[in-house]
Length: 314
Image (cartoon, rainbow, N blue to C red; front, side, top):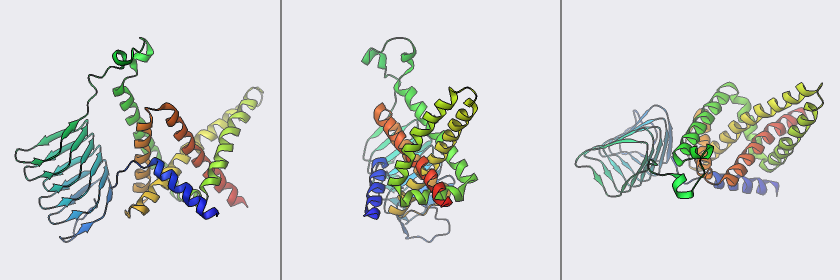
C-alpha cells in the first residue's frame, strides 16, 4: 500500500508541474536514416543531419539547434535562450523564448511559430503553414485596464513581471547547477530518498518548516540566545536552497525516465529546474497558487534532507 501511495504522489507531483513540453540529441558521427525519440538539449551545438528525424518533441536551453535540409522533427520545438536554424521540416509548433532563429528557404514548418524576445529571420521561399505570433507587451498598461493607483503599484506591469520571473528562473538554475557541482553525490542520494518516501518527506518538511521559525523567534526575543535563533534561520535558508536542487533533480530524473531521455546529472537538474521555472512563471498570475506551489516544493525538499539525515543516524 505504501508503494502505491508513493507512486500516486509522485505522479500527481509531476502532473502538476508538467506543462506539456518534451524534448534532439547530438548526433555527430551517427549514420543517416536514424530516428531519435524526444530529446532534451542543454548547451553546445546539436545538428540533425539529412535523412535523420526526431519522432517526438525537442526542448532546449542555452543551446544551438541546426536542422539540415532533408531532416525532420515530427513534434514541437521549445527553446529557451537558444539559436535555431531550420533548413528541413518541422511538423509541429516552434516556441521560442529569447535567442535567434533562422528559417532558410528550404525550411518547411507545418505548425505555428510562437516567439517571445526572439530575433527571427525568414528567407524568401520558406514554407510556414501556421501563424507567426510575436508576443510583445509594449502597449499593455495595467493602470489603464484595471485603474491601478499611482505610486509603487505603477511598476507592476506584465513586462516587469516577465523580467522578474526570467531573472528568478536563471538564478535558480545557476544555484541548482552549483549545488550539483559541489554536492552531487549527497543531492542524488537525498533525491532517491524523496523518490522512495515522498509523502513522509513532505510531512517531515512541513513540520520542520513550521517549527524552526517558531523556535528561532522564541530564541531571538530571549536576547542572550538571539544569535542561535538567527543561526537556525540561516540553516533553514540553506537547507531550503539545497531542497530546491533536490526536488529539481527528482523532477528531472522522472521526466528523463518517462520520456526515455538520456541525461547526465547537470542536464537532469537543468531539465527539472526549467519545468519548475515554466510552472512558477505561469502561476505568478495567481499569487495564491504560486505561494502554495512554492511551499509544497520547499517542504518536499527540506523534508527529504531532514528525513535522509535522520535515516542515516539510525
